[in-house]
Length: 263
Image (tube, rainbow, N blue to C red; front, side):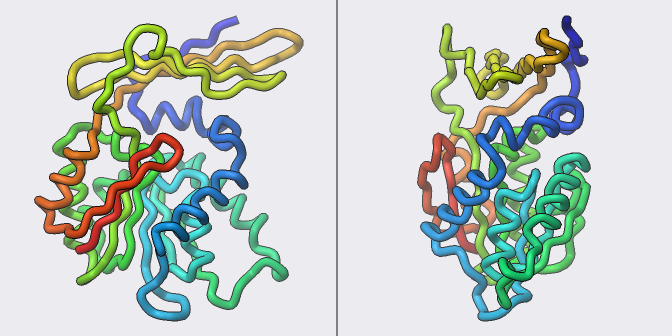
């Protein structure tokens, strides 16, 4: 049985119609991914500039909270922004699960969720943000490279002196060819997730996600595809410099490029 989804949808629609429901599962489990972010922020020495709560942080493309919750634990007041209402609803559900008296710290910050296009949010934001993070390949979901450059410039304008930005994305400098374009994401007895990467041109790929879910003893196939732009570390570092960010540090974590820079 096949239930195809319109292939020309954008990334927001792709998440709403297919990925939101299986996102934490395909990432290996929500708790494990949150712990990985805790360890990453520890390695990057991420902490509020001042002691206590109240330091502002913005998590763009927050999803179900992999970054937002660890940042709140560190004492930041976090604004979690995502275009997918379904993903942010799951973040709020996780917040309810985490909000237990025995697990709360006196220095734990707060989280508010905002359903919005991240480019429009950055353009219209007025409050300063000591820290901005944009992880999970969110940047490659934007409309174009110019949108990425404009976003980075807008973010610099809303950060104070010695503010910090941390970007995460999958480096696309080495195109996938042949059988390497077929990526087994995750599988168990009830679900199989496979991804196919179609090279469109030097700057663009189309991602085809195929999810088989067991229903009544058989598998139902859902297919969705969307366009992504190809980003490279060198290009992103150039855009940070053009927006007056300084001291870029580039690392790799679980196949993702992580760039940290200062205003």
